[in-house]
Length: 191
Image 1: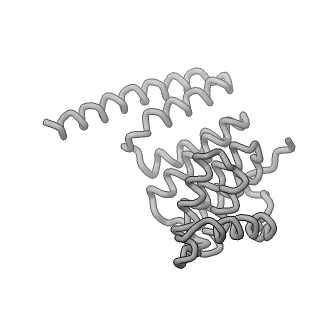
Image 2: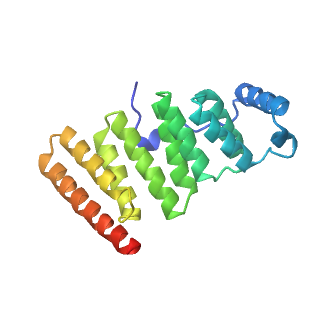
């Protein structure tokens, strides 16, 4: 796989009409929900989610793309499209999809999730510097999220893969303290 810089990825084309048409034909023949006006964002998003769980990845991509044709600024559909592409080892397309999720969303939680997903994707393809950058962006948006200890741990592992053990140790230490802080906060809420 030839790596491309994050900012030089190809444009995304959502007009793979053969795949979309096959999914539309299948949905029309088997779904009363579709016949009742299901050609909307929510319908295709839910279809994509169901297909992803069923590991019907090509169909899931088509469903998310049909959702995005209805609502091109839907960060969730871009993220899920990227996740499915990652599972298919289509990494450049996955990065482009996650990049698009960041581009279209101003919501901090959505951006946190997109940066976290991008960090995991870069980690998977051993682009550790970019993974660290993405994880730092996610933590800057939601430093006290329930997932922050895990993100810090993953950042630490990325640092260790770069043989930067001081930075890794710092991340592990912060992950531990963040986990204790979140645990204490959760216990206080339940009492």
